Image 1 (cartoon, rainbow, N blue to C red):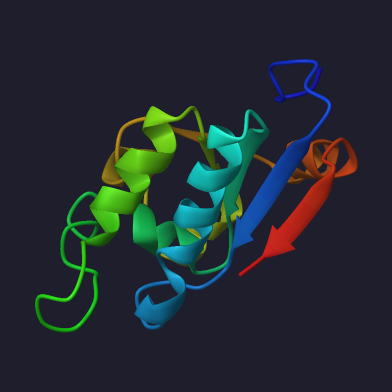
Image 2: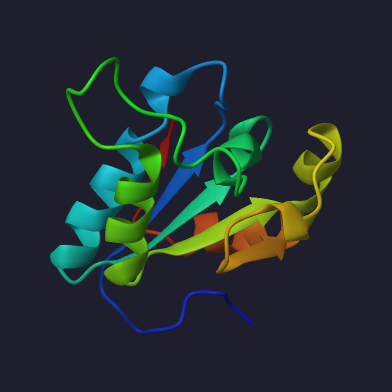
Length: 129
């Protein structure tokens, strides 16, 4: 059974592998996912390796551009999820980062490797950050 929820013609899966040590790569997947969702594409972001760090409740408002030149990461997350973007996290990557699902923002779903592979196989495009 696929985690994709519709029979959409187009599906995009973004894969976020970078964490808090590389903040320059944090907002782009959310921005692009929101843009795709606004185009009525079914969209999800999968967080693996260090990516789950970006979903920590105590981090999302602290990551952002230098100075007052933009929005914190939480703005882009909210924008994406409000448009229906789903957030999936790799269970072994939680362990890698000493995290539990309860440490993450609301709405994140934990999945394993087989589910990720199903998402990737059934996506129109897979983009990695």
